[in-house]
Length: 245
Image (cartoon, rainbow, N blue to C red):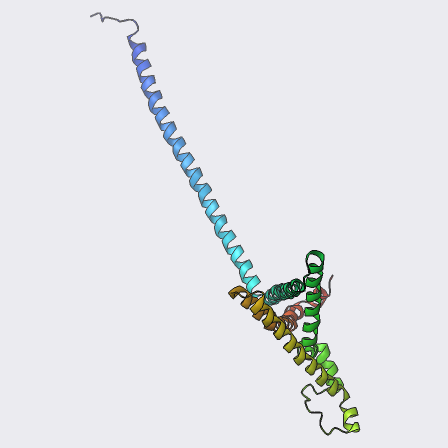
C-alpha cells in the first residue's frame, strides 16, 4: 500500500522540535545565569561582611590599646592643661583690655594693655607656683631633701642668728609662700572686679573661677600623670627599644 508523502512535513516537525528545545534551553540558561549572579552577589556580600567584622575587631583592639595605654591619661591631662591655659591667658588679656578702656586706651593702646594684662597674669601665676614646685617637680623635691629645706616652716619669732643660718633655705621658702598668698589675693581681687564689672554673666563667672583655681590643679595633674604613668610605658620597653631614636 502506497503511503502518501507530503514534501516538507518531516523538516517542519524537526524545526518545531528544535525551536521548542531551543526555547527551554534559553530559559534554563537564563535561570542558571540568574542563580550564578545571585551566588556571586551572596559570595561578595559574605566577603564584605567578613571584612567588616575583621575591621570592627581591629578597630576595637586599637581602641582598647589606646584606652589602656599609660600614655593616654598623659595626653588627656596635657589637653586639659592646654584648655585651662588658653582660658586663663584669655581672661588676663581681656582684663588688660578692660582696664585699658577704663583709662581711655583704644586701638593699639588697648591691645598693648591686653598684652600687659597677659604678662602680669603670667607673673602672678609664677609667684603662685614658686613655693609649690617641690610638689610638682622631682628635681625640686630632691634639692629640698638634700638641703634639709622645711617647706612647712611658718614662724619667724624669736629666731636667733644661728637658727636663721641653719634654716636659711627654709625661711626663703617661707618668703615664697608669703608671695604666693599675696599673689592669690591680688589675682582674686582683680578677677572678681573684672567679672562683676566687666564680664558679669554665667559664662564669665565660669571663666573667672577656672582662671583662679584651675591652672595649678591642671599643672599638678599633668605632672602626676606624666611622672607616674609615663614611666610605666618606658620601663616596660626593652632597653634597646627604650633608647632607640
